[in-house]
Image 1 (cartoon, rainbow, N blue to C red):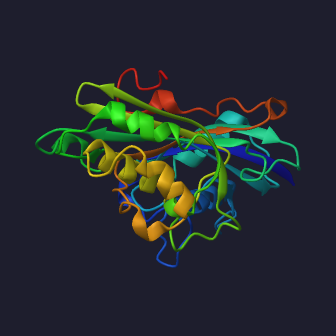
Image 2: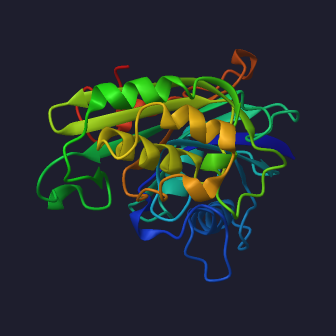
Length: 269
């Protein structure tokens, strides 16, 4: 028995999130079934992921680990498993890791990207792959408000009621907002994220960008630690799990999938 890490990319539009469910329409269910077929075990092969994604959320880079007695070439794990996966999910790489590696607990940080079209009319070609706001947004105001979130904070105001995390304190390492024409790109990096935390932050930044609250309202929200006074959870369509950071000693071939995002130049910070 040995431990293997896999880098996974998926379009979450057709899936009911990452985590396995009785109906079987999740990314984890599809991947575990494909692994069972590839290894010849006939039964789903359990995997552990770096971060669970919700319904409609995408992953440019998700990392999982599994324990298996099956010995194959690393390229065979990629091509062989992909043979049994639908077009919306694909293994990008496979790498052996020591027994102390854990896809979730060994991760030092996670990065998400949110894509938002700020146009008067919807952009049908991006349906399910980007959020949309028709009111004009003041990106400068949004950047000022985002700066308040940097560092260690209690993020209770941005935490879903269904969140199962042991505590609401997280460390926000970076939050960049870039504008590329009518497309606004949010990039967030933290040690970990609470349930719906990114979408709740984006929703609040959008309201501040619309002028519905002052920039100072972001600091007030953090201090109040009350989800009920913050903006509604923003749509899932434009959210991508982009990167997982691990100690270099594990030697993983790739942990940043931003080059796979569906827009030229989007990987650039």
